[in-house]
Length: 278
Length: 120
Image (cartoon, rainbow over all chains, first blue to last red; front, side, top):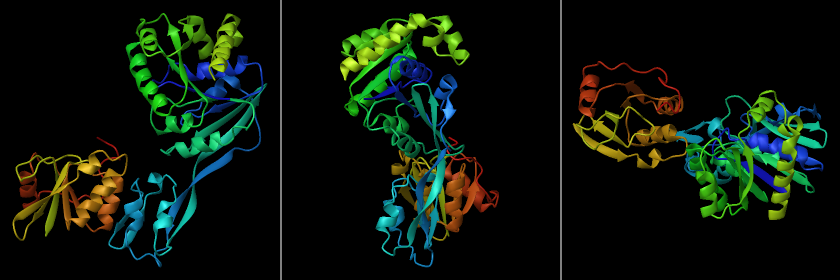
């Protein structure tokens, strides 16, 4: 079973839910940090690095000017404007390229070949029963979905995996959520939390994925998130109370289920709830 | 020669758009005939990325040898330079006043992008 933990709004507690869930699930589990622009699950898990970090690249076009006649087919095809053709000269913008390979296919002169462009690394760490796989996007690279897909390619065929998604509702989130079995949307009981929860709900409905909500810092705001979930028939899987000790444990890089064992049951119940719904 | 201006309107009294890549339109003024044509740039307003690159290609295809705009980012500048289009930045309020400044030689030619990408 592959579970993704997403949110819409940043800072609601995706990583908190992910690492604590992985800790209490009771079996060997893979945890994938798909927030490759700022992976942070490792701060809570620690763990030993297994092998060397794997370099992840995307194929970008290289034009042989001796063969190119400047027809412009490549530029017209590219949805991301990674190629511009002017005065029979092709300008390539590798930082814009998504690596689809279309330019090479449409070039009538066979003037385009693909060369790898490094975008980041994928690393595997072990911490007890938890195998953490994290992507780290290189500084200055804006294209995270190919790295997220490379991280997800390491999900084993058997067993459970929990994916820590990036915040927001754009391409990196879609790349994370695709082909998962269940989505946990973490929110907080604030107007911002509700606003972004609505956006996230629209995304998972578009992707036709089953999902439920975890309300974090419950009691710190109002009941509008719960009212919204009831009106929309969205299951509220768990409510994590607004407890200062949780924030203190987090600030020390500790998992709440270790530091505050009274919350183990909450996460065990959450795990059981998710299993019951998939 | 033809000069391109980024604008939100369709005539010489229209505002000069300070943005290049995501300007609504380009007014191409022909100094030989004292006439102009307007090219729509609407598709780039909503482009996910590469608006500057695409706009530079549009201006080049319009036959312009010079461009007057508010600001120009690095990718657009690279394409414009490859097309041999001179770039002038101006904070003039209208296309007509920017044209006047150009004619008087009061606009300085840019030798590099003056803003980072996605500045607006």
